Image (cartoon, rainbow, N blue to C red; front, side, top):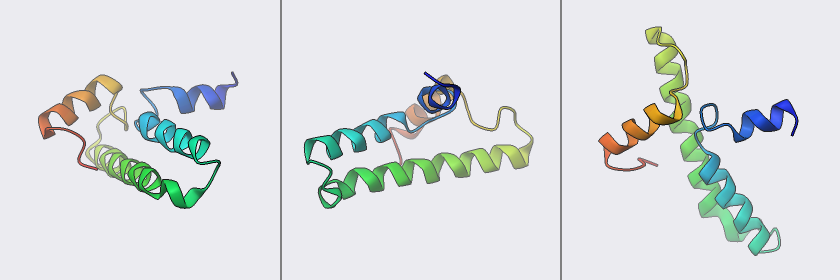
Length: 85
């Protein structure tokens, strides 16, 4: 696996692996008919948007790392009562 692929699959770097995998599974199940998977695509977009906003806010506040680790994200989502997207 090349370095870029490892980054994409790294839980600490990519918070939306689950949503990405779900989108890919949907495409595979429906023979790449994108119209059948719009819900999964929207969920992925909402996930990316949500975590991007968190990352931007942490960067403004001077918190390192910019993206919360997988453990921090799990803690944040638990305190919110689940995924807000």
